[in-house]
Length: 402
Image (cartoon, rainbow, N blue to C red):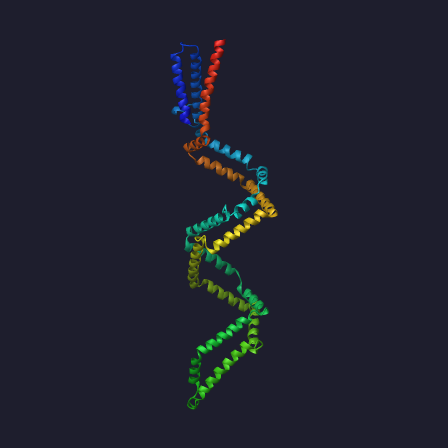
């Protein structure tokens, strides 16, 4: 468009020279000459006006030219103030948001498979989380997570908590399978170490018992008695040994909650465990495995977890799309939130605009504004050339009449 406008100006100059050459041949050439002369003047004047907005015409430092680059900072402040006074004020924001169904639009986007809202949101969130996780120093992040976790553990008094859990478990009879498992484990341990028990009895028996073979009989009796005892405990829910175990557990639960000495010992053990270097080494290994697992899941968008997330987002979108009451509540919340943001942070938002424009160099501002206005600037030159020419014809005609 710049070349077209310049070409029209050159054409006017050529027409002017031609009209001057044949001016006396016919009265009509006078109108052509007036049209071309006035068109050149109008084209040159508008070229000067358009150019003066963004730069010095022909590089000459004429006053009041290069208006945009010379007043860049003032333009930035004026633009920011205009935004704040006309857009970022609560009535305008509230009125605009009142006519918008943000929740419905979000629900339609998430629920529609053709739009893929839930998939894109899931993939975008997964990629962002993976990039953040990869960009952070794994050792430092692991230490920070460990420090935060251990600080919370240190603040928590575990003894009453364990006591309450144990007491509730006993009251609900949920400890019975644990006792049975312990008894079975004791039976298997006894079976695996039967020979060691026999050897221990043989070693402690005197020579007479060993000579008569009674030590073997004694060992068999001891083992048979233990096996019988364990079997009776498993079979009989009301066995006295079970009652003793339950009594001991109940007393332990009570002491964990109310015995100051036991609670202090538990706290000391907890502190020693948390402060043990071996625990730190163990945690670092656990953290590395957790981090690798999280990255693997985030990098596999078709995995089970990603599919579940996509289904959940789609279901959320359907609720948002189909539930007018939910839409009303969410839209009201969004409107109040955004109005509050415009009140609290409107100044910072427009300051960001102002400071960003101020940081641009003059050439950048000139190029961006000129590109934004674009073709219309050159149409000003075209119109100026043509309108000037027609005005010249009118003036020439009036001059002939007068």
